[in-house]
Length: 293
Image (cartoon, rainbow, N blue to C red):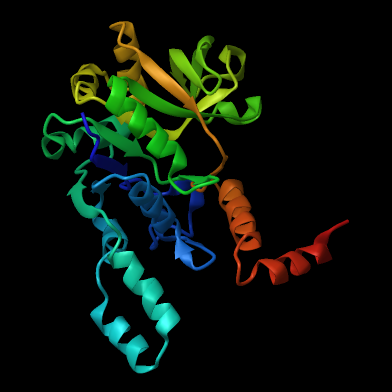
C-alpha cells in the first residue's frame, strides 16, 4: 500500500533551547537563511510524500505561516526586482506537498501527539518525522524515500537508526538489533528502550526520528500507560508492537545527523550548514580559521 502521509509533531515547547524559544518556535530557528522546519519539509517532499500533518500548539502559528503565500512580501520583492529572493520565497509555498495541522490539546508526549492524527490518517500507513533531527544526506530525502519504498513492498514497520557515542545514547530511544539476517544496512529490531541509563545500554544505535507505521500503531498507543511524567511514549507503543511478534525493521542512516533541539547539536548544524553553503561557505571557513589553535 502506498505511503502518502507524514505526521510531524511540533507542539513541543523547546525547553532545551530556552530562552531563545520563549517567543520563537524552535522549529523556526535559522540555519543560514532557512528555518530548521523548512529543511524538514523539503526532505519530506523530496522523499515523495503527498500530505504533511503538523501536530501543533497555539504558539506555533509562525510555522504554518512560513509555508503559506506571502502576497505583500512577494509584491515588494517583485517591485524591487529582487528576482532571486522572490523565487526562493515562492519555492516555499509551492512545495509539492499538501500541509495541514491538528492541535495537540495537552502536552502528553510523543505517542499522544501521534495519536492526535488518527482520524486524518484514516486507516492508512504513514510516516513520522521528528523535526529536531536534521539529516545531511548524499541526496535530500534519500533515507526516508528508501524506507517508504521498502514499506510499500513489505508493509513492515520501520525505524531509521544511527550510531552515536555511549554518552549521547542516554538521551534517545536505543535500538537493539539482530545484525546478520537481512542486509548490511537493514536490521531486524529486537528491542527499543527510551533513554536508558548508561549501565543498561547494549547497543550503539538509536532512533533518529524517522519512522513508518501501519495504522495498527494506534491500537498499541491506546494500550500504553503514561510514564512517571504523565506522558505517552511512542517507544512504549513500539515495544508492544514487538511483543506481539510484529516485525520491525531498522534502516541504518546513510549520512549524518544533527539534534537541533539541543544547544550543541544546533550550533554544530549552524557551522556545518554554513560551511557547505555556496554563497558564504568559503568566507565562513576563512573566518573559522582565526579560532584554530
